[in-house]
Length: 276
Image 1 (spheres, rainbow, N blue to C red):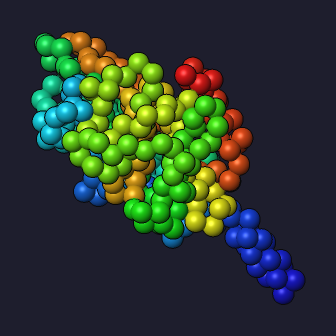
Image 2 (image 1 turned 120 degrees about the horizontal axis):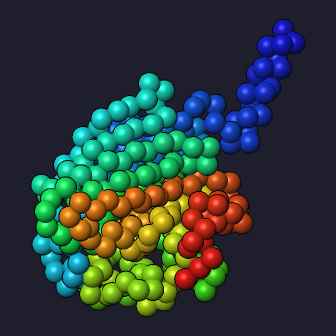
């Protein structure tokens, strides 16, 4: 009996501290990536994966004229759900080999893009992960901006405190561009006037215990979407015939401590974590 009581006490303590009682696991069906982790509200998070590959010059153009066709297939799933691998064919000549792995502080995404054709590929950026955060934040479309954040002027700033614009081809959402990205190439959603100072975008859990945040090693945009979602969308900047580019993205799940988030960001993306 003492041993049983000790085991139950230990499990209760782990639950109270927010520690996962089961190993995190991944699954993917019909372009929906599901991450199961006991630390998450409702113990899971849904991610639309992959969403879109986009041409330059898209801010004043209809979305269907900017994104290009792609087809993704799952090629490997670890028996314990810790890793998934994929092959995506974009149009006809570009191959993207990518994988998602669970790591102690979230998910790690890697992408290997190769132009196997004989002509340059003009695709400028892509939306790999549309992270659906309604369950995590406990808010709907009208309220989740107060639980979501970027870094502006070096400070964590919730999106409801960022000066918002509403004039764009498509209304709703907000696009945050880093230096060097032309407004004419941006997502056709409203462009924020106030600049972000690094490549992190994230949100607080509804109970204020956790932070969820996205970052990429080459950031095209940070995006507050229209499906109660957040994006950190990477820059590709085209591919020459035969050229290969490697990109990385992280999804962090950490206790509610912005300093710990910054430390993880500096560890994974030292070239950009110092700010723009």
